[in-house]
Image 1 (cartoon, helix red, strand yellow):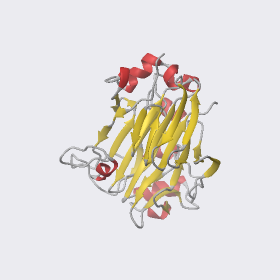
Image 2: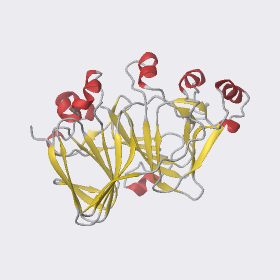
Image 3: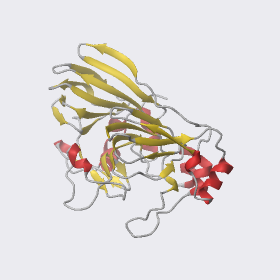
Length: 329
């Protein structure tokens, strides 16, 4: 099979907390209005990206997943193929205003309550942070489900919310069940399970595009919030290798994906192999690089099919990249 790295046309989302900052990352936005998210690699009923080059040009990722099967997503994702799912979803976010305080379910809860939807474990890499930027993550020490519900009912949730300052280059691992909100002044790359299920518990008393408050999902949220996640801290990158101009750090590792940050100095090459076990998704955050014969400019994401075979990433300039793949069980 003649497989090659795949590039896609993003799907844009105009949620109320967005702005115009994704233009700074090379996205072409409508002439008017705000854009909150750019779904870079997605195969979901709410957004399906389209291949932009090569023999598969014009095909959606959902259609390509059905056509190529495990040759595209890998044997580590056989469970996803059985559920007619592509395993991951890659986004860029422009939080010009704060997102709602929310939580995502795990797979078991989603399967029981949301049809064939997956749970949502995710991670964030901060691409840009305004001075004083922060995230809401986890709960304050001593918070109980009963006290949390009372805070919602009384309109006084702040005593239970834990915040962390963040800066450009930071990353956050967000397992399902984590109470969280991305606050204003942040641009973020997000790697996540292929899911769009969000349970809001507080939305800052604002209204949606229709002039009405956006719906909350308090009862479901209280069933899935991990109240043991009290005042968590930011994770520290773990250096994996450093050799011949290539330095790799592991950022997050969980059941659903591993994400690395990879630095390449100009002229350096990273050599890898997609041996059929997992797809790989590479995102160029800074610099200029090629993967085999496919050129990338920042910020751009590229999907390597699981059965691609050997590949190499070559830096035309000093580069910062993200590499994500699905580990074996």
